Image (cartoon, rainbow, N blue to C red; front, side, top):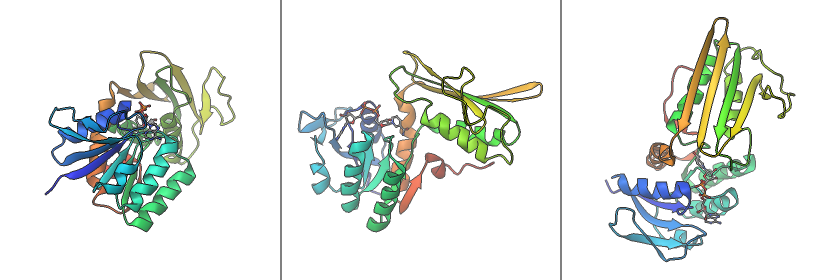
Amino acid sequence: MSPIRVVVHGALGKVGQEVVKATCQEPETELIGAIDLKASEAFLPLPDGSGKVPLSGDLSILNDCSADVMVDFSIAQAAMPAARLAAQKGINLVIGTTGLTADDIAEIEQLAAVHRIGAVVAPNFALGAVLMMHLAKVAARYMDYAEIIELHHHLKADSPSGTALATAKAMAEARDKPFSGPPEAAKPSDSRGMGVEGVAIHSVRLPGLMAHQEVILGAAGQILSIRHDTISRECYMPGVILAVKEVVKRQGLIYGLEKLLNLSGE
Ligand SMILES: NC(=O)c1ccc[n+]([C@@H]2O[C@H](COP(=O)([O-])OP(=O)(O)OC[C@H]3O[C@@H](n4cnc5c(N)ncnc54)[C@H](O)[C@@H]3O)[C@@H](O)[C@H]2O)c1
């Protein structure tokens, strides 16, 4: 079988560079083009020294390449125009860029339906983080108190993190009664954390950290901690490569990496 032909949008960014490396290392994928606003050369040398691929600062590459998949780790404002053009060209989408609105996600779903392509959009491609959320949902059914400590590098603009908010909401949905924690109305400045669905979320921002989250559940006489630590951006690559392999086999929108993992036990 011929390899899946991949174009990376945001290829010179921190995650984009890892995607370039991963698609070159994976035998079932082939990098055929790269796009990044910062492009200053017409070609991107492959990290293994085996050659080079076209690189552009705009979307022109999408017009005349025969890519099967575009992987996007850029910025939200750039991701949507790229998704529209790629979809028109029949190129499947794997989007990790965050900050997309509900309208953007709805538009991607529409694009996938109209152009009969697959689209995987995942706010978190780290398998361990997805498993941490899954395990937290399972545990939430059995323990009435939960808090989340999320720790990130000091340059992260938002707090609490999207993953922490999504974890609290998913845990609350997994239960048949509310958590016994702080109410929704608790202020972010409260030293007891921000109440989301009865789960207090605490945000730590420090240089030296990357992305970490600990979900702590409590019941009489016992504590259960579920923790995920991101050590390097390589952690996203198994999830991205899985999505690239799956998106070419499917049509329509798949939101969240968990949908590709056959998780059970919920
Ligand atoms: N889903 C996940 O698991 C996951 C993990 C990490 C990061 N992210 C998200 O991925 C995105 C990229 O993260 P990063 O840390 O690599 O950021 P980064 O700033 O290092 O990289 C972004 C790249 O996009 C490029 N870019 C910006 N505007 C562009 C445009 N108009 N056209 C083409 N390229 C453009 C920039 O030049 C840069 O090289 C962010 O939205 C981030 O939140 C998602």
